[in-house]
Image 1 (cartoon, helix red, strand yellow):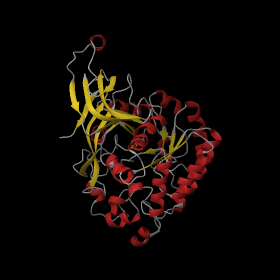
Image 2: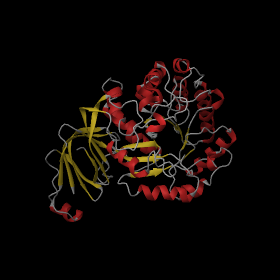
Image 3: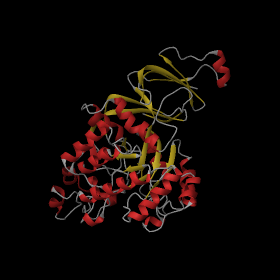
Image 4: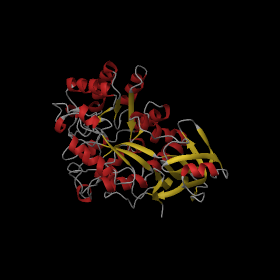
Length: 435
């Protein structure tokens, strides 16, 4: 049994906030009560098969919120475990306050068979947090032949994506959407048409001029977002526009949401914090797909998060080895940055402290809405509900670094941010405690 006392509880699902004690037993929340009143009655003690001397966490000065949910992580396992593996990725997630993550399927082999999916899910069970996985839309991520989506869904895939590679054939996209609509599972899209790209990871603008190439034009994203929103409305598929980067794409999603409740979009912390100038300042550590764009794009993403057009924050946690990212030409470095351990702090620093979102809004974007996309039992705090919680100090200063991830490829290393995770609790067990 675990008692969390004196914390400021935020439940985004009901909107309930206030100082509460939370009593946990056997992986569930047993009682939520006013501070000092969450003791176990004799009857409850017998029902819970426990003593009335629980372990205690004093959360005075901290927020107690649903465990964070990240629907877009790359754990590089199988195939690229020198960058990250499921165990180290999960450790990074726990340190960042996440109790549930959804792995992308661009591993090697790709998650296009039941065997590979089963490997990922079984290894995920060893981590202490909930590690879910998407399966691929197409075999080998080649964009030509659909995977056996029904078999993969039956084996535990929570959704489908070829993230990392755009799906260029509209007929394949339509067929995939029709299948996921029948399966009642989401499909997520990496929206970058290579027709508009010279060198990826760098915005066509100041950054590409600085590096002497054509970079990635915003039309690469806009054209595919426009196509996939139209197909989603026609098929009724539940879709996620991943790592949105342009103001035009934000507006397209805003308009599409008026026609369908199945349209969802995610933004990364790096896209709501940085612009293409960071690519010039930090080099390969700020190279990602899609690239950082202009200030108007960044602010459109912030406003999209504020008004709910973009309903989720997802890290696109993309670890790489130091040798791949440091002291190498930006054009030869892989795209992507780590994100799990800085996500919450960046959300507080850039969105809450600057007045764009309330803490409850931030928890909705980082927990409740992502859980709803995948219909997960997560993202809320209620008696009888899952004891998946994050306890964080919203005022504490923290310097980004000292990562639990294998990787350090982040432009935020060394930044002083606001908001520090104190505890992460999953299934009623403490899986991260700040030292």
